[in-house]
Length: 121
Length: 219
Image (tube, rainbow over all chains, first blue to last red):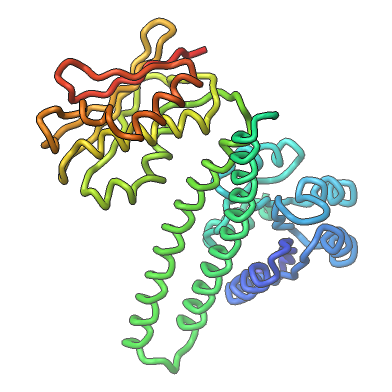
C-alpha cells in the first residue's frame, strides 16, 4: 500500500492537502492538484496509480479532466467526488469510465476501501 | 421566462444553489481537518489517555454537526434546484419529505410534528416543483396555525384515476372549535389556493374539519 501513488484533484487546496496528510498517516502517498490542467500534467509526469477527482471545478470540469486522463492512460482508475447526494453526476461519470464515485464530505475509510479495490483489481 | 416573479425565483435559486456548493466544501474541509486532528492524536504516545478521550469526544461533536449541516445543505440545494425547470416530474413523497425536513424549525417552534407516509407505489405529478412546494408549505402553515402544541400532522398520498390527493390529517387539540375552518381566514390559505390554481388543483376540508385535502392532476 505504501508504494501506491494517488493523485488528489480538487480546487479546494485545504481539502486535498488535509486528505493527503490523512492518507500519508495510513501509509498511502498522495500528491495534489488544484485544477484540471495541473491534474493532466501530473498524470503525465508522476504516473499515479489512481486519481481522486472532484466533478465540480472551475475551468475544466471533472468529466472533461477525466476524458483527457483516459486519453493518456485508459487503464488508470479514477474515483470521482460528487456533492449533495447527487448520484446522477456520479453515474454519468461512470459512463465515461470512472471506477466509482463518492459523495462529499467523504469517509476516509470508504475512500481507502475504494482505492484498495480499484488498484488491487 | 417573461414572468418577473419566476425570474426572481430562478435568480434566488441559482445563487442559493451556488452557495450550498461552497458551504459543502467548507463542511468537507472541517470534516477532514477534524479527522486529521483525530489521527494525529491517535498516533501520539505522549498525550495522556484521558485528554485523548476528551479530544475525540469534541471531534465527534464536530462530525455530528458536519453531518447535520450536510443534510440541511442537501435539502436546501434540492429546493434551490427546484427553480431550474418550470415543468418537471415531481416525486410527491420525496419532495414532501424534503420540504418537511426543510421546514422542521417552523414545526418545532410550535411543538408540532410533521410526517409523510410513503405510498405503496411512487406517485408523481408533472408540474412546477417550486410552486408545488409553496402550496405545500402554506398547507402546512394552515394546519400548524390551527393546531395547539403537541399536535401531529400526518400527510398521506392517494391516486384515484388521474387525480392525486394529498391529505393532511391534523391530530391533536385545535385552537378553536372551528378546527381547520379558521385556517381559511389567514393569508396562508390565500397563497396556498393561489399556487394550487397555478398548478390546476384545489383544496378543501373534510366535513369534520380535521383534514385538509389538496387535489392535483397527475398530468
